[in-house]
Length: 107
Length: 116
Image (tube, rainbow over all chains, first blue to last red; front, side, top):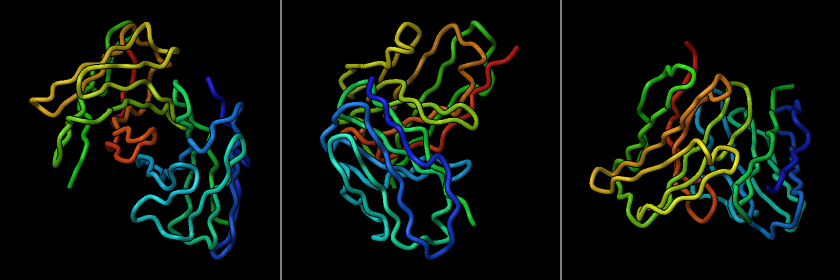
């Protein structure tokens, strides 16, 4: 199975900060990567698919980049609603796998 | 509004079979792939497997020996059975639409606790 390693596992940031989360795959996955946001007690929400495509309705402050083994989720200006845990997920091959998550909390 | 809803017992005894059903409202189950995922309390996400509208399946090898899916297109439902459960199977179980490999529609999730 393809392993996804996210870093950092947690970070503290302030409203307005630029936040970057990385996801590294154990082997090349082209652009077959998605990013999700999960708030406590809620189901994950799709933010980005195909590594860089923004899901309908997701604010443009979220962006994704990368291909192959190294990927990035960027929040250009952190908003109060963005404090949550973020997961990457690969769909290059089965079994589908997720990164361990990055918790973003208030500084 | 298209929605998914998981239903089933919230408590299952060790060694018994966990059974959940996911119902789609506001849309049709036909033509798509439907997945089950789970998340142990305080931990990350695990994909359990998918079933297509036609009944084809693929399971995570980590659970393959204990899991089975079924689909009922007439009721817009698909179901999960996980046998021989232990405390390690305690988790929030989600159903989701697997569109193009990512999951763009999720149920709210249901907590299943394995305990005697």
